[in-house]
Length: 85
Image (cartoon, rainbow, N blue to C red; front, side, top):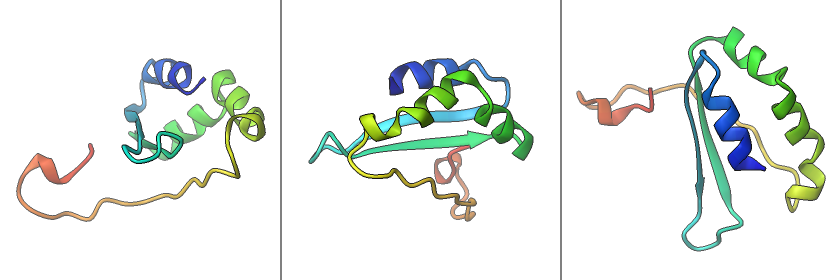
């Protein structure tokens, strides 16, 4: 389900990054890194049918309620290695 979400999301024009990672210690621990061009692109994504389906299936897919925290970039260093997008 999450791989299908990622594949579909990669087709959205406003998505700069959408990456799924899992913990090496516990493969049930997942993190998605999402970077959008604009706030409007975030809203666009939230209204896509594949995203809505994922949200509806959260109780059966996850053990507990996933968090969705928002972060802003903190510039550090001089290299592109210091940022996601």
